[in-house]
Image (tube, rainbow, N blue to C red; front, side, top):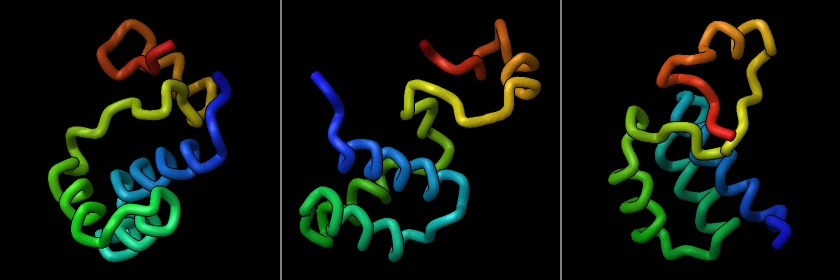
Length: 80
């Protein structure tokens, strides 16, 4: 089954919020638009999913190969 474009955009919203590129208000608005969630539900989802407990949600890493090699064999290695 192919992933939809919206699915990837929702994952990127979570990752952007985790890195601090989006604040709660912006990420809530993005989830409302992308997933069709109510504002309260989107805010609760983001509030409960703290920045420190979102790990490798994409399933792949966007970092350069030189940085990925340094994480090989550790708990920070990208899942396959």
